Amino acid sequence: MERTLTKGDRLWSTLMEMACIGAIAEDGCCRLSLTDEDRRARDLFARWCRDAGCVLRVDPFGNMFAIRPGLRNDAPAILVGSHLDTQPHGGRFDGVLGVLAGLEILRALNDAGIKTEHPIAVVNWTNEEGVRFKPGLTGSKGFIGALDKAAIEGAGGADYFSELSRIGYAGQRLLDFEALAYYELHIEQGPVLELAKAPVGIVEGVQGVRWFEIEFHGQDAHAGTTPMDGRSDSFMAAASLALRLREGAISLEKNIRFTVGRVEVSPNSQNTVPGSTRLHIDVRHGSSPVLDAFERLMVEVISEVEAQENVRVGIRQTMGVAPVDFDHTCRERLWKCARALGLEPVSLQSGAMHDASSLATSLPTAMLFVQSRDGISHNPLEWSDPDHIATACEILAQAVLLHAGAPL
Ligand SMILES: [Zn+2]
Picture 1 (cartoon, rainbow, N blue to C red):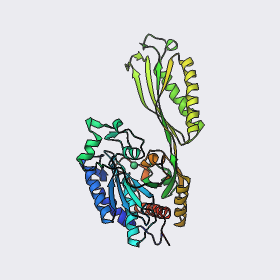
Picture 2: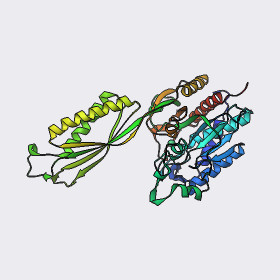
Picture 3: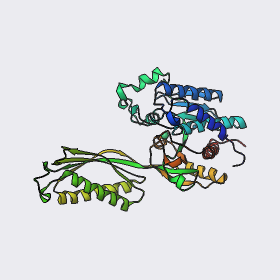
Picture 4: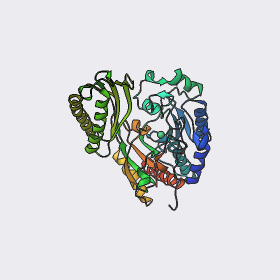
């Protein structure tokens, strides 16, 4: 890139300075939400934002908004952000990049003396990772009014709102501005961009997720005395179902994700044919009709397995999150800005949930991914190339500027 608005080296050194807070071995970070490390990260971010001339607001969920006023202050704001909290054995980029890229945009607009019609607000959403408090995406869900405060559970008895007060980030008031759109830059956390040799990708949407518990009821029996053809073996039925569903899922749609991540076998004794087995299934795809088709297939295969393996099977759905489609116009804006910089990004789905998943249900929202080395995240080895980060930040800045409207 020739002349850019944003400065990649400044963003990089800001990222590295933030990474010193909660630093762990092998260049990792541990900044669990609402801990002292989180407070120090928030304090540093707040200082940087004030230095950039922003007004800082905190809402009742502890979300931080650094607002750069617009020429029309009654105009709704463009939000740009992500999260500063990390996993316990996390890296330096997941979430942090999206917040600090937002800050870099504000600094760059200041340097260039550019005023925008709409205000721009850089956001740090609270507890995206969901490690210390469940559910995750707490701040972004709270912001859009999709979270019951009483439903937040803290690990080891920690109380979300007491912890917010303790670290000094309990906002009392609802915000006095409206939002027009939300943009988030995030590391990909998967291998698609690296395989495509593309520094950045524009995210079409976020996969939907459905969880099922499948109970197989057979009969406990002696492993030595019960002939093979007289058994009612719940585990063999479960294993057969798992393999057939994997095959069936792939033939439905190659981009589906089907996982059996947990199996409970009872009585779990080596010399007993198990009478009861429970499978925990996680299935994901970007389209609800594909997920519906998977469910129909599952019911069909279960009745075949019941007949063939002489067991009874019960199905229970334990969780469901609908797929998210990001806003067409905001995505087009990112494409246009990427092409203006001579880039042809890859279009991809997000396999992970993000704050943008929450925001997309109430605001025009778009996401940009930057390539992750080896697709690794939630790990100190997490890494994105400084040049790729600089490119992604510049695309984001141009798109936000276009949306926020700068007078000629
Ligand atoms: Zn993240």
